[in-house]
Image 1: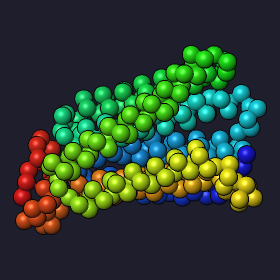
Image 2 (image 1 turned 45 degrees about the vertical axis):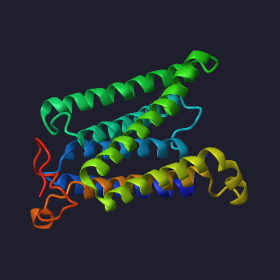
Image 3 (image 1 turned 120 degrees about the horizontal axis):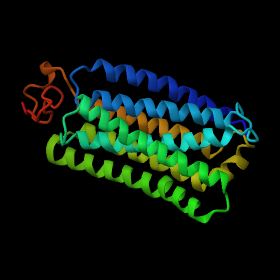
Length: 252
């Protein structure tokens, strides 16, 4: 089950994620800075657990393996939920960066992680239990898919009605395209690719690579809508100074 090529991509993803977290934290006045750093942190943890699972670091027969697999599924759902909440921050429904909002952000994310982890463990312990399987399928595909779709819709509304920034729109659409391609290859062409490549690569490799590219484009998208240098934002009709005024949008 050792996935050399995929592990290389996951290793690169962890390094790139640390770099993105650093750059997010250096944008001191950007809206949603701490919340976005949490998203990247969860992506980092989900990638780490994925490496543990596919690198044979933990044998499948080990009693720890189901718990790590359940944790990984919980982290994936938590990461996607975190992304969805970050999308709501764009509309300033609540003030970002405050203790109250951060606690609500963390508690809701931890609740999602704990819920998916628990149902995953129940499913692994009772593999023939149809109810557990259905609930897990619902969370992994329907819940996660709905959060991604709602995030995409919210950001399209934000860009088209408020920002009107073509560069940001291109980053968002690129992230969506990369993610969809990765999932399509992972779930429909993995076996065929594995045979064609003599088992050196499969859908996991392309899924990991495309997910990394999607996350990187999400960073570029967030970076493009949180410009904090007034020297470059003042006088530009297409770039409102969204990053400085945390209580409402201010337009140059």
